[in-house]
Image (cartoon, rainbow, N blue to C red; front, side):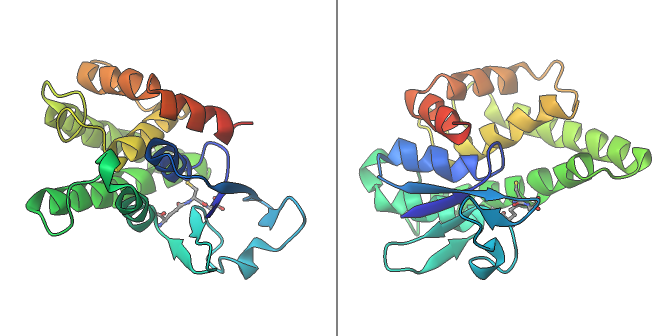
Amino acid sequence: MKLYYAPGACSLAPRIALQEAGLPYEAAQVDLRALTLADGTDFKTINPLGYVPLLELDDGRCLLENAAILQYIADLAPDKQLAPANGSFARYKLQERLNFIATEVHKRFGALFHGASEDLQTEARTQLRALFAWLDGELKNQDYQFGATFTVADGYLFTVLRWASLVKVDLGGLDRLMAFKSRVAARPAVRQAVADDHS
Ligand SMILES: N[C@@H](CCC(=O)N[C@@H](CS)C(=O)NCC(=O)O)C(=O)O
């Protein structure tokens, strides 16, 4: 498998999932400004939509979208319990959370990363603070979003939480979320994935 990624981008979430799953993979860095690979290949010939992550399987088929890629990886290593069983209600709850992170949280960072007007940035920060406050409450006293077991949704939430401090989203007082971030960061697979992402 080959993961197309950009350092620090949301492609860190599938990298964490691959590492947690213990699956071998190749990583191909994409320059998101030039939309090229290190060898000059036009990334749009691989993903016409021009974004990461993209997971290329060994038979050449490609998968886009974090919510799909993360579940695909989890299903390749069922013994690691990175997602509840397919068809179970718990699996739908995981899908709900993956979509929530992708569409409500992740996408709202766009205004902060792509130089929107001050008003739009202020609005995005306010909205993100509210979403993170809700996630903080949902954590209750659990180690991870769905209890004691780490799932692919935790790697995704960790990935977007890393961005919050970069673009000054106020997470003050969200102690459960901060403890969650530190807990995830300390996992050996996550440490390795973060190191590889920036190497
Ligand atoms: N819908 C996609 C969105 C992925 C996405 O927003 N990727 C960003 C990086 S975090 C990207 O590659 N943006 C292209 C760019 O910045 O030019 C998903 O959920 O996986």
